Length: 168
Length: 229
Image 1 (tube, chains in turn yellow, red):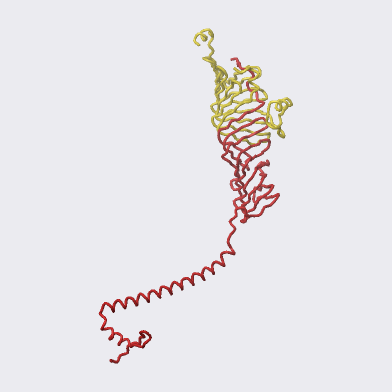
Image 2 (cartoon, each protein chain N blue to C red):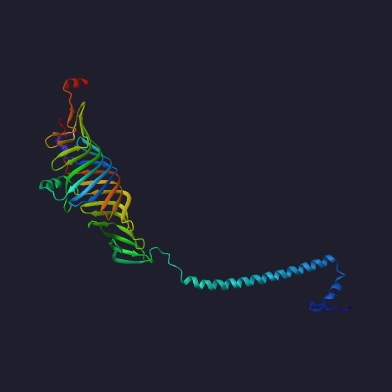
């Protein structure tokens, strides 16, 4: 297992069939399409399409210092900051035994959250949770399950962990 | 001796009347007469052939002299390097979506349409107001078809993105530049490689078409290994 601090310093590796770079009003967009696989540390996300949005305006000083230290790429005129990455279609996030599936997933680099919508379901072994929206807070390892009137939060949690250990 | 309008024939330069000739030949038998006639015909045919050969030679020689004098003076120079070399070559494309081209030097072919470029640099104007810069070691400009083929260390710069490829082919008609070669992309906070590239000038979109491998830096979406339920 990679050391925790190393995991987050590693670059995010992305594989896909196609990549389109385009200009937007606030910065740039990278659109990865076709069997997209994103890996960082021991977290792996797969989906059909991933849109990475760079925003010129929200550049923070720390990001600037950080960028020069870590990034061997030559210096650019006005480098943007990664604002967010949106995954569409057959979104699946796996980390160790935890797995989440959803129709859509938004990673917000500024808030450090991963928001899963479109029938999200989180499972670990035999335990699972479904809700209208599931928000994973990366910085403090907490999770929010947000339900709505029609379909609230549902969960199945096995209360006898020792039995589970034997079964393993 | 009978009268008759026979021809006067000379034998050994003595005038002999043809009728008398035949009467005197009666003493020769029939076969000898035939052989005599055949030999005479062969002789005539040979003379005719010699005459025809001479005539042929004369006409052939005069014909060759006639054409020879024409073709030599106007033969096209087939040396591929023929053409005019221009230093600091510049060119602006006509039409609705102009682009500007400059090169350290250029060799303009005789047809004036095909131009070989050394160190070409092209500036395309995108549909959203952005500029796309293309530079390479060498290139070919076809003014008639309005195409530019860039080769060798091709670099395309757009905003803070920089693409690199072995070659790239721009077509004014399609308003695209594309290649099938390996490509790489560098941005402020990411790098990518792949195969095949297509650049849509008006939409200001650049696509790597296959086998994309990318690395995004300065992104932290997993803080530690353990995500508790």
